[in-house]
Image (cartoon, rainbow over all chains, first blue to last red; front, top):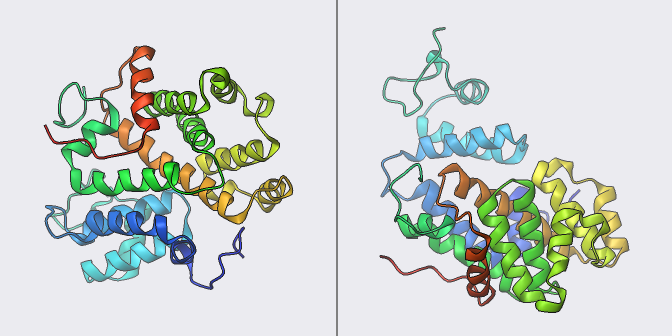
Length: 107
Length: 181
């Protein structure tokens, strides 16, 4: 249960946003520009992957799974692929040649 | 020097939002709503939470600028409250409610999951409302983002404390996206 009474049953950040629409607006607008705007040389998949990876490092179950699922959708991959990146993005096995993540290990 | 080619001589987050106003716009809007919007916490108290989190994140630019804004908002007579909170919130001359909120802010700075039901109950026992607890957590989380943004790109951090006095006065008036150079 949430620490405060959000007066709704929505999961994760959606519950927080519904509780406080004044802060929801800039937060949603920021996510939209950073993660989805197509005027960007990073793909949507790459940006969602960065979101999922940082959420994984922050041990945030909700965010790493939501953004991991978005990355999985954009990459048209399976979840083990996303999980392998979260665990070690340097692993060559995880990536295609055009990835922005430069593989540095030799496994 | 900053890690990327941002406007030279412009300090901290200002240089970054001038480099990328599309994201800067929403970042400033968020700061404006959280720190200047309608709230039962005073603007000075909210700036204090921001400065406290920035201090814990070792972000000299954000700590100095938001401490300056808080001093400005507290007024000359009470300006030293800010320095006492930065030194040790537990012994600072602020209300027990604000101490409990600063404790939650400090937990958020470590990791969201560090905030325990006891931390929240302690704040509620001192009269903190759900909305005040919500905003405290969001201010803290947002400043973890701002701090990492500013230092992750090594934006220009003026070393002279005097620089921040003027900055604090400007910030006290509100957060508005700077004009492009």
